[in-house]
Image 1 (cartoon, rainbow, N blue to C red):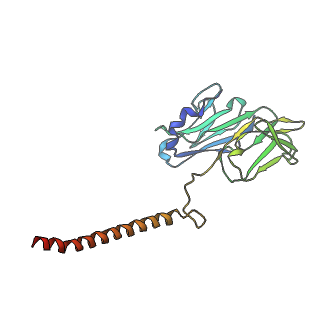
Image 2 (cartoon, helix red, strand yellow):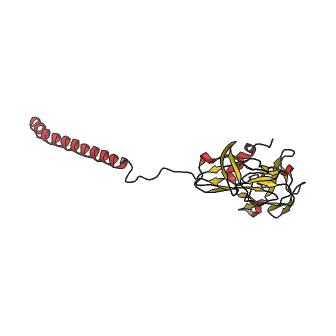
Image 3 (spheres, rainbow, N blue to C red):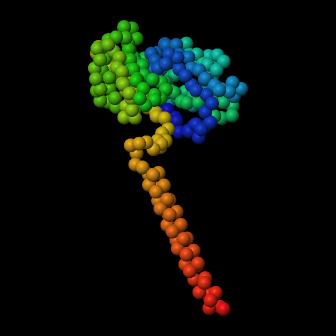
Length: 240
């Protein structure tokens, strides 16, 4: 099993780099060319691309796999044992986002977003074979259940939501089934919207309450002053 991503969660708050994959996919055929790049905000941070696989942990590009090229790592002939979790890490410790890559020796892969997708966006999934055109009819599955069959090998999920997050795979009759890949759906932070004409007039009610309190205080003050004025002559007379 691959090391859990939670091992590095305490670095997430200080991200200054973003790991990208070219071609942009989370699945590859054995023998494909793959380039991973650390898109960095601080070029002096000294970013290194690392990975966890089923056999080795925290190995860096050039240490038995890949060829370093500045802030990138090129894998000219990717193998099934290259399946794993990849990330960029600096000398100071912070890391980038993590990417899970799957390499198969089979004949079918599912091309899906390698990075989290934003709620409301459209997402296209492509089911392709290694040796034939990529427009063959394919069946798409989410969490083990059939979603739909598409005659051209690709499926678009319009306006994705959190409910679309899950484990996806595809199948092309006569060629086989792809591995499964997880699609993450993320959303922007939301804040309480300002009051509108259709919202309950909370501010108006509070303003009225304040006004009533002020009026009551003024009335009480006037009554106290009048009482004092009326009593003052009596006191002066009795004192005389």
